[in-house]
Image (cartoon, rainbow over all chains, first blue to last red):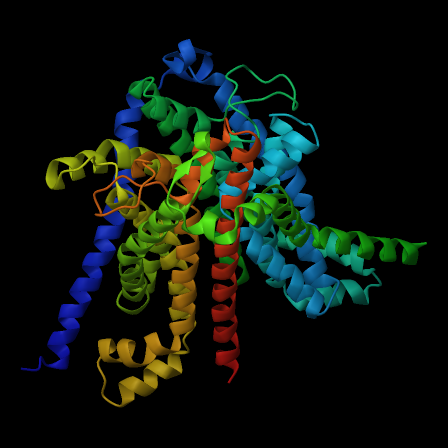
Length: 278
Length: 287
């Protein structure tokens, strides 16, 4: 027996709707589960004191500091490189074999798993360049990891700036560099910030690439040459060693809230940017 | 004066533009440098297809990990691909745009949830569930596949949505004009037109699944043996590197870098395949 096309459609649509509902439920469950178990563990003491007894007691202050410093270092390195790359690709050259090579490199870099970044960072920055386990080694490794995101988002943002803006600037006698710096980049800024924020979010959540480069020292870092433990790494160690599930949930909650907040700012900016342009 | 400035700027920008590919080459160079001699000395076959990994006795066969990575990834795709593509089709074709504009960013936002968090949920919720329902240790191939399947959903959904949205409206209108229902149009026109983009999304999801480390370490159980059922504890290639890197020295460390080479090659093959698919889509649209 053949079902009528309408009936088939009704059946299929309910299946697809079910799939969507299941996906949303699973993803929202992850957040709600962590927040429900973790929020009660968070108080002023948890956020603003040092951990004691390997993290079984006390707070997570040094890991919060590390989770702020590490993405900052990564962005300070990756943002200038990424934005320059995007400017070069869009404003300073035509599509050619070279641009294709550059894009191919960025795409491949984006696909490299974080554990390979960790291996590389460990052998190159930590061992060969003798930076040791440090915020600097970790930041450099993360910079490479987030570079493709910044390039891609900046490129899209720059392409969205209407050509007439450039023409007006050029017709006023501005050089290409002045046009880029004074007209193109300011107009593309929200898109660029989106890319940077996505990079920050990814850096905060990263574990595999960080644990082998920044190490896992629980002490408060006093310079970029110190080893430090980010919230992600701390959470991983707490969960894996079974040190304290209360502290693990608490750390996970702070971690999730930070990452989601950063990503929300990123997507919020992007939406405003898109609306302005369309 | 200004002219010289322009030239310098262009050179600087060009130099910066090579940072990404330069980084990629550096990563490849150093992983190969550390692992390749081991790879060659041990022999291609003995390294890839020997099934005993026992660093203390100097035995380095990664076959169990290779099999485990393969199964875990396949399992993840079995869940993630159909579910992700279904969601993408539903969002683009059967839901008002305003709903999609809320749901898609929500799902992309969730792509940012750190992998350790997924791993933890796997340990606290999924593994006990599997243990009590199906038996076995709980931390297993099945648990790892499920968690990875969920983790790759945002990747597959986001890229598939873009691919399906990019199908010109005229294709759909032509099909409607012939009296097709929306689902018939989707099945016979839209999915065919968006095929290479959807395949690219699945390949990229696969790359993420193969490369995922922390979540897998937490839920897969990490026993070095060839799995005989989905409930067995397994160790993937990535887990093997991350678990032993902390204390490995000498030959042992080289063996881990050699494992990294295998992983690197697999990922590059997947990346290239996805790239080819995306390019096919772009050139297909022109024609």
